[in-house]
Length: 310
Image 1 (cartoon, rainbow, N blue to C red):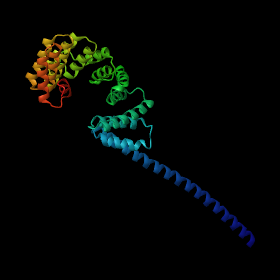
Image 2 (image 1 turned 180 degrees about the vertical axis):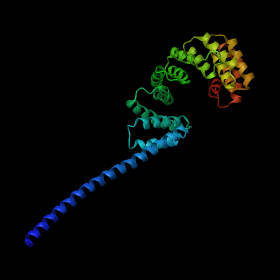
Image 3 (image 1 turned 90 degrees about the horizontal axis):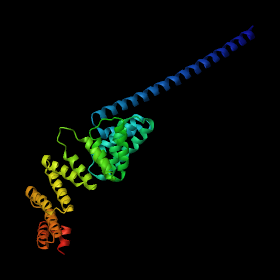
């Protein structure tokens, strides 16, 4: 009997140990699952908090902070479309606010890198094409074709932005497509409103480049008559004088130079150009008198010094 009880107890103990082991395994498995879910939720909650913070700082115009947060999150999710978009947009805003050209190009390049990656995941976001086009414009005239490419895509997707025609006009002109430049600038002109000198002067430059001088003169005269910006008026008069010199209408060219002196005061450059004008007419005495005046007003004026052999 003792032996039977001993074996019975032994069997019961073995059974209990197995049950305990199974319960332990189940408990441990549930613990692992619980910890995994808990950690995942904590991570996701942390990530969601960072995304909410990112949206907040972006909407409040804190572009530097938005750039920093999106950069940090992109280290973990380098292909996240939302993060790439915010990173590119904030880099653009930081770029155009820089005074130093080196710093500006750094952020513009960061913008382009992020937005080009974002386009891999979504090719239907017109705003990305719009910002990319402007970013390429800021990289310089050698990237004008890419500026045109992306701005035209945004335009064809009916993206509404008042400055698209102006940027397109500048970009087309940068690589010599003056006809499309004028067409783009003209789209920015609003009927019934006085156009800005920022539109009138570039349109005039494009007409000059195509040697369509009557149209250029018309836009320059309109700028002089309507602009409240004195520097734009002076630039317009300089351009008019150059056109009249090209057309051998020296009297009108002289009138524009004298108007600049009357409106803006003495200028070494104006006196030098008057000297050039008189020299074209064979009046070397008056020409040298103007060059000397230019030299007296600006002893470092290189072309005046060269004309006077100084």
